[in-house]
Image (cartoon, rainbow, N blue to C red; front, top):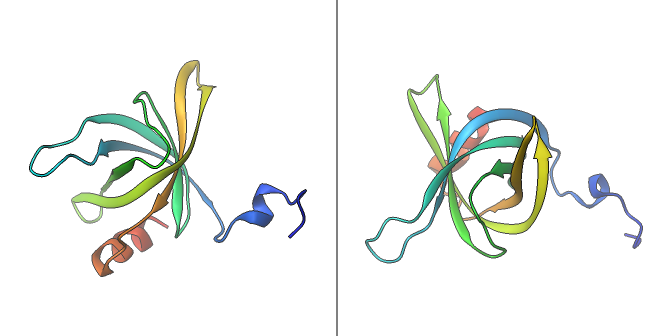
Length: 117
């Protein structure tokens, strides 16, 4: 792949635009719950998601995305790691946009993700 490859060419999986509300949780330590906040999913793939949030997220930070699933009556819990962040403005709001790479994908998480795609 050349140094001038586009973002689409570098992607491992195709993205699907998914404008969904979600909750972002930072993983806590031991038995302590981590910080949480609201956000919006911008797009989603089998390997990760791009989200907008008001939370401060940092590269290599572990997070869990909680995405409501109407059909299941619960939330999909998608564990991942922040791989990049940038400040952006969308719909008149200032956001932190973050790229989340999914991790620890057991069978239950894969099924929940497949329902979202």
